[in-house]
Length: 203
Image (cartoon, one colour):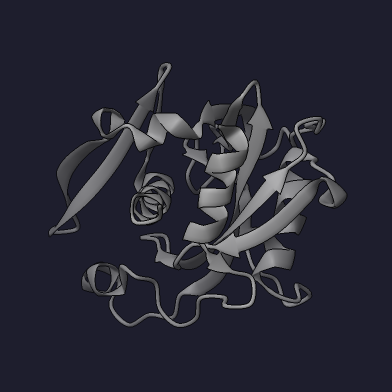
């Protein structure tokens, strides 16, 4: 089952030979809020781990003192720096810096579509398989906790919640995946939903 689901993911995502370019898929919505201000390029790692007969997704819970996204659940990642060769290199570097997973244990194989955030980033999600034997060493300045959630949880439509909020005078749809006392929401939930929709369209 794990191998079959991983193969579906591989078929569903954009291959490494076809990285996404240009604005995020939600550009028009974010443009209503941020206007035409330049978006800073960023990358996150959607890390998949085969464990106990299931495919799991890795998340971080941010520390409470951060100026951006404090206490939120997110994928490892951050801004693409000038020394990064591309989004894959940035996602691998940020993953090592934030959670201590060695690059040689991470095997990127594709992308999801870009996603723009209200904090002004244009994020490229890099999808990868991570060795189940990884040893996490989270940076306590940024990461309070690391945890995994079975991918099957996100594939169950009953676990998705949707709400509409007012953000700076503009209505926005927000998605939530509550899980074991945590709330996976915002940009992270939207990127997960992008993966779910791709999987639903892939046999």
